[in-house]
Amino acid sequence: MPVRLDRLLKLKSLERLQVVAGKNGLGREVVWVNIIESPDLVRFIHRSELVISTGVEIKGSAEALLRLIRGASEAGAAGCVVNLGPYIPSLPEEAVSFADGRGFPLITVPWDVRMADLTQAICDCLISSRGKDGETKDLLFRLLSGEGGREEVLRQLDLHGLHRVLCGVLAVDVKGEGASSLLHEIGSRLIYSYFRYETFPLGGRDIFVVMKQSIHGGSAKFTGMYGVLKELNGALEAADAKIGIGGFYETPSKLVLSCQQAVTAVKVPLPADSKYRFQEFRDLGMYRVLLYLSGNPELSGFFRETLQPLEDYDAINLTHYMDFLRIYLKNDANIAKTSRELFIHRNTALYRLGKIEKILGRSLSPLQTKTELMTAMILRDYF
Image 1 (cartoon, rainbow, N blue to C red):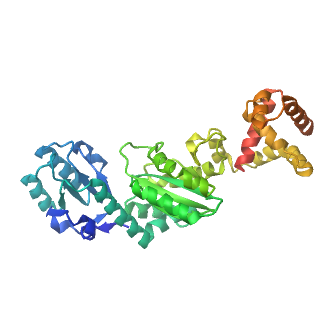
Image 2 (cartoon, one colour):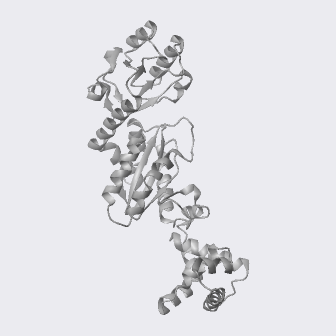
Image 3 (cartoon, helix red, strand yellow):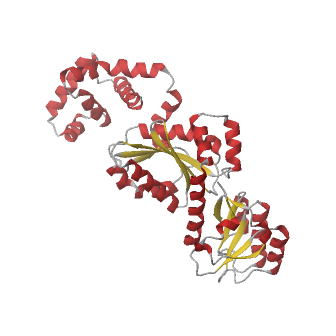
């Protein structure tokens, strides 16, 4: 939930901020912070954001600073924090008069205050407030679980400041111990990187709805997330956990799609040569198609009919021909590569390949047969 600006300014960590104009607008609600350094970027300011500027692109221009303040006010920002220092030595009188006339809070902060500390203090307060209230979390759960009217939920999310922010879903699957500590660490990393998030269990997995301001627009591969997850890789390995990353979009209306993508990504086995315990839906290749075909009963029938004889043989005879076939196909049906990976003699590999052909009742030499078997393996993994 948003927090009133006057409440934020009472935080001890923000005690050096000084309101110089627009004091009658301190009752405005703040949903997040947005660092804007140029008046040319005011179009990226969203309603109820607290705008912060060091003036690095303004460079003492009173006209540019006034344009930024006016643009922030017209965009419906909660207020504007200006870092006084070498780039903005003082506030022009025209800017102060404008802010007072509009009831638009204009706040200064000394140069020696670290912007990282300032933004973190504000973000921590906003996230803590949302956690206590729980309304945004409830709305997101209703949206992703299909409970409640979709259009009404989206309207309420818009009022909560989630309109036109880059948002997407992480699906977390934990098989080992330490799930609660891992989820806490994921949340801490997101906060530290200035991501907004809500989390809840859904469908046997833990879902993180992640949001962050973006100036790029449209659906995008959100590379900023990778740095966060790479730092978590050790904790993911320790908990035998995986994370699937859905697409990130500039509207909460696509969060259902992002959630489906994230769940697909976490279900699909990680590549054998993967360094990390997470993968993005966009990188899944053929598995991406399965998200849109998963309701077709022909798919499950195909992979069962194709592989069932081999699975049954393994179960009865305690053999591992399914594993051999997977490795053989992964190695481009190359006997030499397969032998090396399994540390077996070439003749042993050829014997196993011949045995598989007898069990399946077909030669593995034709390309069509290899393609069908590989497709059946992919379907088996997915289902």
